[in-house]
Length: 316
Ligand code: NAP
Image (cartoon, rainbow, N blue to C red; front, side):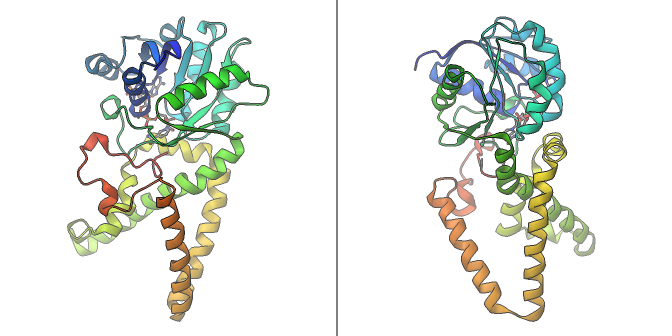
């Protein structure tokens, strides 16, 4: 494939950034890839793994002369990085981000982007419960959505260029506005993570009563349902702090449904339970048909190496 950006600067060198670097390398989409991460350990790992041509001690140095700057850090760190890099951005460059919440990132970053630099926020709906520079892999974005939320008045050519990069990495691109993105993700990703974290917490309380049976007999339900509870605590703290309204709205609806099922169980209302599970099974099957998951046992994860586990619908 043809080079889409001559020089790409990755700020943050964890799961998403390293996967982008591997994908861009493999498909020849970037001339040079440089990066910066907070710790020397991560910067050294990026060089050792070879997915960056150069790494820098500061974000300001890394963005110098870059045609595309990707902010791939936890949401809470985006604003301070924008302030740091702003004076060093090349005229005509594009800045994007991969944060799981969009409006909060726009509020934190957009005010600092200088005139003549394009800011086009984005979010790949792809991830795993692993993090750090060693967890990335080139196929992470294949056949996954990459949502772009360009603010009104964005330069169409800059949006097309970024879209080409995302598609070049194998993703399917869709554009939407930021508040809509945040509501959709509250349903499809953020609230499910919160519920998974809660279920593990409940099981941990129970473990004190039943010894280690919860872990020993961890059957498919608990194991599959709670896999995402191993996800990075910093990332998920920031998601809930910054997508507060949408998550609270969905949690409210979830609680109402849960109470209705609780009442049906108490009253022995089998018809209600059966009708509910029939409806939700059909929805779950349509997700598989839409290509966003597999019905293979263990969701097809059994044979994959640890770092190639990809269950993007749940980790985004
Ligand atoms: P990750 O693997 O934990 O990597 C985060 C990276 O950011 C690390 O390299 C870290 O450096 C760096 N970093 C943190 N604070 C920094 C700062 N102040 N200055 C410079 N670098 C800093 O995280 P990730 O999973 O790639 O997530 C990155 C972003 O992608 C988040 O905004 C998240 O919401 C979004 N996202 C995640 C997923 C997912 O499933 N994981 C999916 C879609 C989008 P050190 O290693 O040195 O600490």
